[in-house]
Image (cartoon, one colour):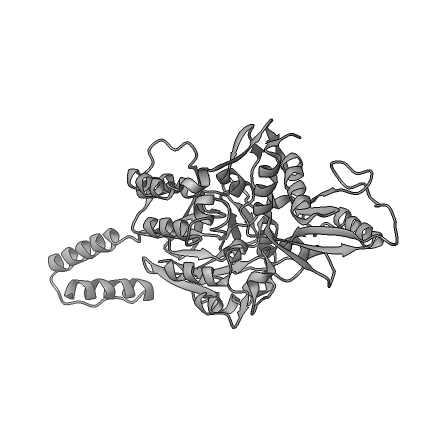
Length: 473
């Protein structure tokens, strides 16, 4: 302790340029000087290094959990965070059709050791009660700063949280996308007693809080273009870990002060950020994208875990046969819209292209697993009746408005084949029956007269395939 105090005194003397008056013998003083010089030199500041592992838009990809687990075991250090930028559900039948919907993916994330996840729009797909159960199940915390209301789910979610790693205080803020309706892209029936504010404005309000921290990280489910807007409009966010747009950013984008990263989707990739704090607490960042596809040595214990969830014989049920492989939204979308026409006995069927979740439907037997992979959403078909003018106005809005998703449509209208020929024939006495999933209805079909079919789009597809036995397009 005496030596430390003496070293501190010498350091102060050096700074203040004060002459030291001493009475110690020459040799003793020189020895102490040499010792203190050595001590101060050996105590050189070591930069703090923190690793942040990030994924986004997992969509229930439990088949990739063994690869993710193995990679994290190889790379984890004591200074690390594992985070998700949202959309944990909807996309894998073994997760979506599990008796406790969504349970398997949360269980896998718990075993791996996630710390935080943003709230994604597809977190609402199973309904609020199920979401509340999954939040309770999670050993990690969900973050969202632009959700409000009286629902229990809102009370279970924090707008932000903080963590201290190696003495560095890190602020994490979660944010969720909304579209022109003011709601996230999910079935609005799942949003009872919940409201949302603009995500960028909500994050901006945390500037003063961020000043108390060494780094500010946003777990964003806004999509890449809105992440760029967020970075352009702020000067206090160090890192934006993005999701929703399924973008793959090889290294990172630097916009204004912010580093923006995103790691594709479906656990095909793992992102790794390394934060370096120098002796002046200045932050620098490096980024890496790690492929998890065709992973050579997945975690053997997690393979056993995954195989336990694959023991679902119901999903292996064969319901029909596909004569030739169908590719992309256009061909597979024709099949889906025909199924909606069939279920609703409709003149016109509408379906969002984003609801087609397979790139191809292979020739051969069609199983329930394939159907629920193609259309994973719980999306009830609803119908309304519209005169020709209203139908044409609707189709023109779909064709011309950029805010709308690309919409697939089919019709039993005279003269139409694969798609509706519009304007549809004007018969003032005839009302066209228009059917779609409720998700799309809430966004684009403005009619107060609504009739429920009690059938979801995936159920309609199953019934249609069973009725025709062999698909021929």
